[in-house]
Amino acid sequence: MDSIEGNALLKKVNALINRLDQEEMVKYFKLDGYIRVNTYFISPFSLITIKRGLKNFLISWEMSENGWKFVFNNNACVNFKGPLTSQTKDGKIIHIKIDCAKVECNSEMHYAVLTRYFKCLDTFYFMVTEVDEEFELLTNPLGSVCGWSQLKK
Image (tube, rainbow, N blue to C red):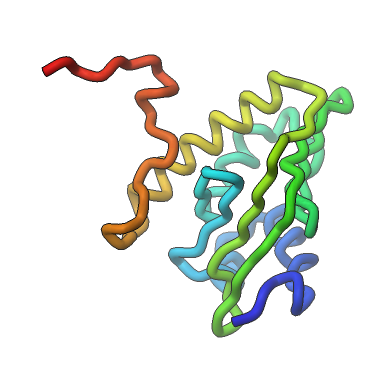
């Protein structure tokens, strides 16, 4: 198995996530492929949701071997900085993983918006993807975001 860093696919992935052409996505990503940023699992096919939702604010985003950087209007920046690893099989990307110990940002508001998108897409990923029983579902439960309390027995 290869990686996108090792076979120069990283430039193609950046061009692809900036265009967000679904037909091109199918050429490069496995259908059950994912992008994981810390504990958030995101289907690459869901990236269009982030792009549409942020179209009036987002200037650019780019993945590198050092993480995933989002640049917004007014010089706001959110950088999920950490090592990027990936795995490909049969020429298609299985996963891209970014593990960042600390997010670098100069706008808490933009970070909060991205985190909310990531949580929603994490939930969506597990709703539409088959996973084995050992896999931890809903790594970011909706209840913790909404402030719901557990039902008492």
